[in-house]
Amino acid sequence: SVVIPAFNEADNISAVVTELISTIGTCQRVNDYQIIIIDDHSSDGTYEAVVALANNKVNCVRLSRRSGSHTAIRAGLHRADGDAVLCISADGQDNPEMLAEMISHLDSGSHTVWGIRESRDEGFLDKLSAKLFYKLLMSFTSNDLSNIDLSNADFYLLSRKTVNAINQCKERNTSLFGLIIWLGFKQTGVTYKRRERFSGKSKWNFSSRMR
Image 1 (cartoon, rainbow, N blue to C red):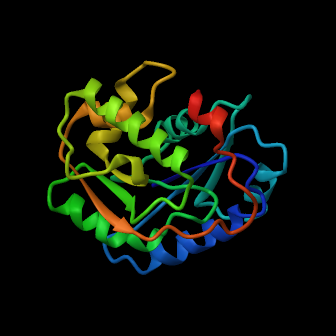
Image 2 (cartoon, one colour; image 1 turned 120 degrees about the horizontal axis):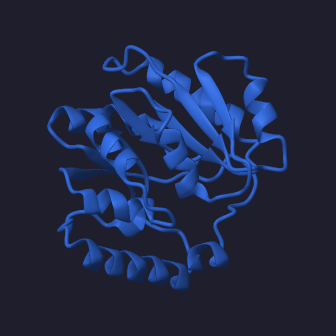
């Protein structure tokens, strides 16, 4: 299963889905798939853009109000039926070509595989705030992931065991990354070079980080 949170990504979502389907088609370990797009109460016709794809393997759920990407992803995880679930952005920056390598890590016993960007092309304060946040988060979880720099983590592949564990947790207003780390299980990462957005500007700003 693929879960994609989307807020005002009508101009990007079709290209993202098309690339995903093409990539999945080349992955020998995948014999069936579903793509679940969670429209985080967009105002630009994102939901209609997904419906226009007219693909019965691609579904869209529209939230009744804007709730944030982590809440949107958790809504998608409850609807995901696959043996593994890829959570990826709707703007084209995450590279789905890493899927085969990520699946190989699941086959080797990992339950969470993080996509770790090679570098953050952001300002100093943005980089510093990310570093501090994840350092604090790791201190709360008491889980040693010293080999993974979560401040550079963007998308991820979850085993069915991890998805089931997440779905059993009823907390609200949590960091999904923090929850995944806290749950434990074996985790690893693959590095990739993050791309530019297909179009538009990021909605992830200072106020989003503060929340």
